[in-house]
Image (tube, rainbow, N blue to C red; front, side, top):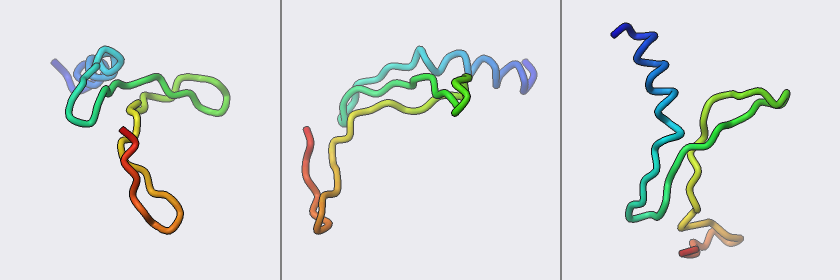
Length: 61
């Protein structure tokens, strides 16, 4: 396999990745650029900790 072939295979496999671990469900979703064209993939996961005003941490799940 060439490097280009491996990169293509990895790119094509990303949307099939679905995982549920200690932090909950995780998957990739297609990202679009400002023109509405495909621009790679972003991770999609619900945050379990967020920072609020006063720099206090809050458990979301």
